Length: 248
Image: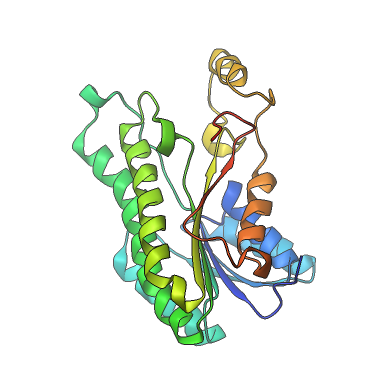
């Protein structure tokens, strides 16, 4: 697979889990990575790990629920590096509750972070990509955006919306050599999934033909592929990384 030397990648939610793994893998492939999240201390740790392996990384404190912060951070990255070639929309939150008990703020907060923020980030970076007629936008959605999940009406709706956003923007910018794709992880072992009960873990494992949870690096390698030149004829697609939990 070709190197990503010379490319500049912005990864949101890069302080831990899938986002951090994506940042590490993209840096390993040669990209200069802009790590963005709310936890600056964890971002600095990730950046130090990248630099320790001779990679290039910058830290940008960002709350993706703030449109002003999104615009300011994207502007800063472009000012420092001249462009943004790759956007990985990974930042996400959960506020789980059955639909009949879900409070409006829990709905609004999840939609703002998991759907509106990716839209605003895409808007913010597209000018740079259109100018150079090259870009890769990769949205991290979820298997639950395709099959739904009890107690996650807000999360599943946002992730389903992210798939629709992926396809719509892909159609709009395809002629400019910009691809827009989504990755739908299944059950990946991260901090977000660490608190499930043993009973729930056993139930989920029975739904996975490969009989194991996924790893954050397995999602990151899929991101690396979609960011590459080898994936230049793939756009508007949703790549499942779920051990066979959902097929087709």
